Length: 350
Image (cartoon, rainbow, N blue to C red; front, side):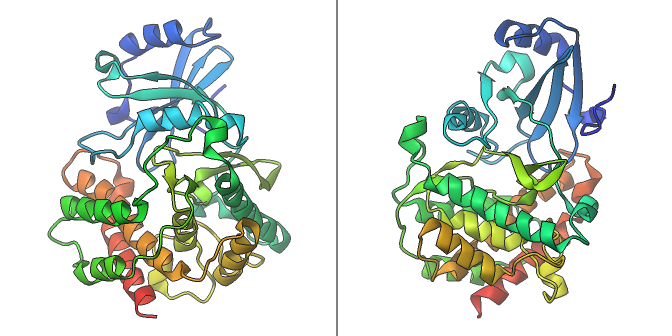
């Protein structure tokens, strides 16, 4: 039976099964059946596959094709996080094994547990539209899941040495600025003024926590029978210890409202304009209540997140322009990048 959450592996994203299968059988438990490989088709960056041995299912994660920015798509980091975090945060799927042997697939990859549910994107947003009560519960669940991560003691789950929290915001600004300049194409917008504002208005660091670094609805798997119940949080390759308000900024970047200008809705990935969802102001207040943190300077985090998201999309877009990936979903990323840069400017001017 074909798994409805997967697609056939894309022609340019195949895995060398002749090398992979013996390695998996030697390193994973319960791999007695025949191997079948399919692909999860929803992601935009890292490539994710279902690898099944009979009834026993695993998920394989690897970086995207083509050159990637240093420290980006870090499978070693993601494995380290998920090999430990599941002990204290039940929304983290457990990673079983990491492969750094380049002779197998030519890149690092790791294999983790399979969780079942659905991921809500704009294309299947009907699951919440028309049900304001469900929409309200779903919105609250996202904030609760994020605040729950931020309340966790990293040392209690073996992640007390993850990352370098001191100077985190400074390095984030410097790092994403460098990535922007490395990925722009001739048609990219000039973001000099926006980058300057972000650097000038840098807020204090605050007490560090675990930070997911890409916290949004399509990185949360929800239960098929109750989309307001989280099953898993996905995509941990940028997780570190740092300022948790960066996660709040990311969530707010994707949190659209019914009255937002078209520019802000460009490339929206969450149906939070549907009746029942809280406003961004209400989300900020809820996070402050659940986390106990000062959210008075949240605008900086919104501006920075708009810029950071633009960089992430530009890194994907430039690979498409260079022919390093042929996924036609990425052809529209240029306008989305311009929209995010303009959104950052608008927020900074408020």
